[in-house]
Image (tube, rainbow, N blue to C red; front, top):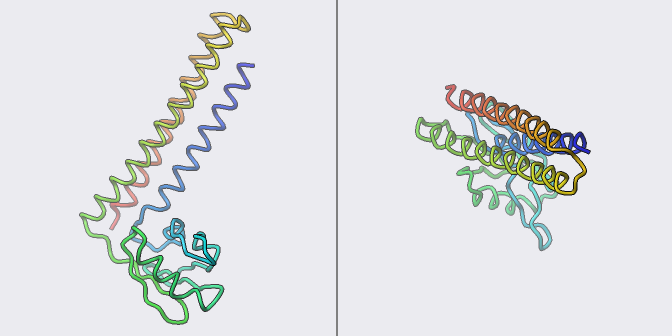
Length: 184
């Protein structure tokens, strides 16, 4: 029973790391990457859908993304959605939409670092919340007399070790992202 709780907590913490990677993908570095536009929602027949469901997003060169709509009528809607997104990008419209990424200034890099740190802090909070939930489950097992106090103490130590491992992994990934952001 305790082993099931440990496995469940590890799986949930791993999902938190995956979510962190998705959050980091949205943080713009100096290079063009299709995942930068993942959060852009486009109006399509009365509802908002992710950009990648109405267009192909590719890379033209190291600083330019190309968005190729599946339907020609979607060009203006996609162009408007990119401009109105909080990414600070302007697009050039022709048969395909080109999105040049401006060079990052020192100030912009610092702002992107703050965004990355915020994502990492949110991941740490989520990991700690998972720990709190699992420790609460273990205490409930102790109250129901399904485990002994020694088992509870050992399980608590094991959960703390798992938590420390994943928090260290978040710190490692944050350091790598900050180094990538500061690379000119």
